[in-house]
Length: 354
Image 1 (cartoon, rainbow, N blue to C red):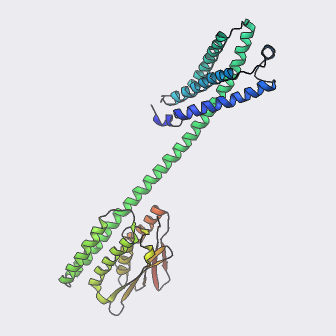
Image 2: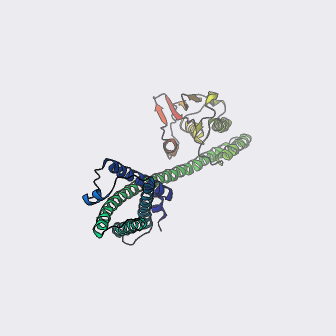
Image 3: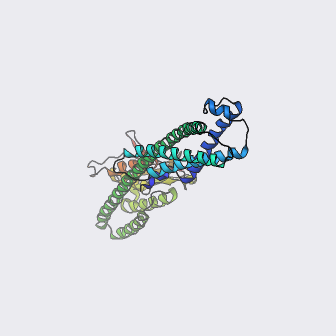
């Protein structure tokens, strides 16, 4: 059984639809009864039927038709809930089954009504009543089948839309996780290279650097998709201290942060990767000290530095900025703004206020 096929027509919905269709149909019949020019009775029936309104009779007929409509709906749901090897058999089974149910119930209800009546009816009158009842029932059956197909079509469209959205979300999540897995080894590799270089210069500074590196690595092990800006800034501060252990007064950082953005969201390690990018690609010396500025703006935070290109640029795999841009696009559908006016390089990250 295909459970997804049943879900589009739950029992509660069938009951409500059956009741609504039955009431609407009988409102039309009631209007025809009062105005006298019903289109659903032949002349013989109209001449032999007195215009005597009975509430109990109306409720009785309403109940019978509710049972008829409910049965047709349930039959359709049952057929659509099964998987056939040849799907083109389903419409044929639904049509033939609905016809048999309609003819059987209409004849049975008519027999019950005549049996409960204290009047005697001739064969011709019974034939005309049966013919008119079948016309009404088959008209009603056709309307029900159209409603069923309309509901099935809408359900299938919603199901396809949900499946497509699920596949899209899974694809985005897969890509996002892949980008995250690229970032952490990238950062660790560069940090270990820095530590290796520092060990040969000053072992005392190397120990301090290692302690700071441990703090940053503990931060990366949180494995969160998003994080408060305040926590990300704390990690960035720690990383900046690591860099200042190596470069001393030749490297300075300026934090210009508005506290109102502390609870805004950013992607983990985003600031750290931008600071790392500034340090990696620029000359840092006593003659050319580097100032890296981290500042908040209008729902954004930026990392900027004067352009001081190295004569021998460090090898880069290009993951950093590309990774960050793609992660923001996948997570929040927002763009990372990168500007280079020839003297200053700036990367602006959007802040998310959840």
